[in-house]
Length: 244
Length: 308
Ligand SMILES: Cc1cc2nc3c(=O)[nH]c(=O)nc-3n(C[C@H](O)[C@H](O)[C@H](O)COP(=O)(O)OP(=O)(O)OC[C@H]3O[C@@H](n4cnc5c(N)ncnc54)[C@H](O)[C@@H]3O)c2cc1C
Ligand SMILES: Cc1cc2nc3c(=O)[nH]c(=O)nc-3n(C[C@H](O)[C@H](O)[C@H](O)COP(=O)(O)O)c2cc1C
Ligand code: FES
Image (cartoon, rainbow over all chains, first blue to last red; front, side, top):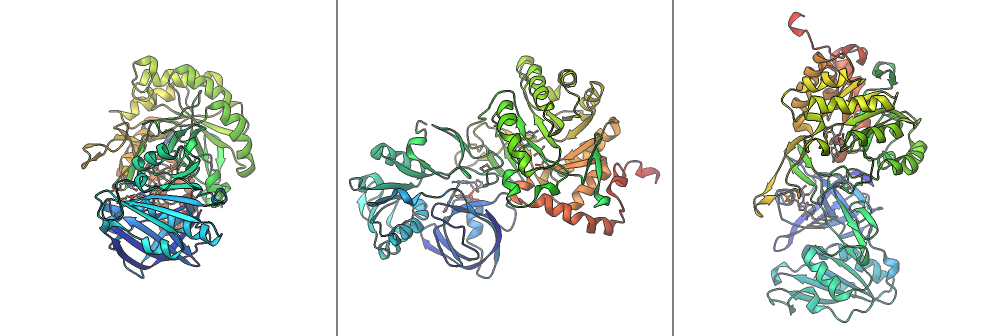
């Protein structure tokens, strides 16, 4: 974990309700599946956890969905402004599991953390398929960016406005290779039900600290209690209790 | 630095800054950020006789200048704290540490305190009496002067270590509880624990916290905490530790003027992880500005102001 001031280089809409912020700072601790906690200017007491979407040299890319007051406030931040952040939080995805090929399943803004993962896997020569699910065509982001990495991309939309009509699971090819999943809880559960294979799932919980001290984000797992922020956010599918 | 020194129940502190229970874990994560030996001491996560997972999530809700938590005393239990955590703590913290203890019966408290009290690294036992009393109809020990005194007396019998009783603010008269704890043998009082609060998600029309209500803390509660420290300082003779909403060196001084001989900093650690070190580093300059030579000189210094 590092506490640092990041300078905003750009902040612009990517798709309906989805924004991208590029920040300048030390990205040496930004690995796929890890997250940063942003301290927003104004009346916000707690920091906002946002996953690393990409990190190249001194540039950190975050992709976020406007869901509440904090993420709406984020859209008002302008280039040149500084933002205080804790970076390098969480365990991140384990890339060593993917040798013969990886299947990345993302739902909505949950596709964002899969991008750096896809890039690193491709750099290691691993074949990657990304199954990206959205509600509607106008919410799709990063399709071309994934393809540019040499990733096979399958799109699913709930309303059928693009790609396969239905859920991510409807567009999943026969599982070949290691599975990496990030998205809303029901989507992850559906993927787990379908796959039942070893896979890595990135979870979300409301956080107090984001670095393991408050027990605000604890969940029960097969191996006992775990903090989503410090022991996760990435967990093996078989560790999770899917019964709620 | 001499001028920051203070004493807590007979044990000297290099400075009055103490991270509060539940917001500092066992110090390990913070030790990776700064040398936590700069602290006066710290109060580690509330320990219970048995391991506890705590409440279902969401356990955290935000509010203006603070947060609500419904963690539910998650901890590995007293045996694991003694067997696994304390031996590791020795490697990164070299001062007496404060053990925060919770329980759901008088026997729980006494059992856990007896075990922890035998550990040489424990300087103080801080008993959190905000917990529901399962044998007393679920009413919190800390809202009933008799139940509070019973816990204090039982713990007093099993340990020689300084006993600090941590009070809940969710009472009509905080001084009554404080006096009752003093009479039962407490060596100090710390306050306040969290205020009972809640938030509702207007879109989903349900409470944000899975447990509906939770404990409210953070800068927003500072005036309430200060008021209660002021009242308790006037009501008892034993030392008072001020807790609640402290976020700056100025806040520390205000708390000490109200009567605190030391302070605990909670929520602010979660959002500004280096806050305790920053406050310690910042105190001398603030003292210079306010004409304070030594912190110990100002404890309770605002009382009797009408006659000054
Ligand atoms: C490890 C992790 C990684 C994340 N990565 C991303 C990402 O890359 N892109 C993205 O758009 N979102 C991500 N999220 C979700 C994001 O943190 C929330 O959408 C955001 O905090 C909402 O803030 P708000 O003020 O707009 O919403 P409000 O509902 O107004 O927020 C109120 C409080 O609830 C918390 N909160 C609300 N929703 C969530 C949630 N889903 N998860 C955790 N806390 C929440 C807020 O942080 C805040 O403390 C991530 C969450 C976690 C835990
Ligand atoms: C996440 C969280 C967990 C807490 N856990 C405990 C605990 O285990 N025992 C205890 O006595 N107090 C606990 N507290 C209360 C704090 O120690 C402190 O009394 C309170 O938060 C007020 O101080 P603050 O406003 O500086 O946070 C907790 C507070 C928070 C925010
Ligand atoms: S958010 Fe504090 S422990 Fe995870």
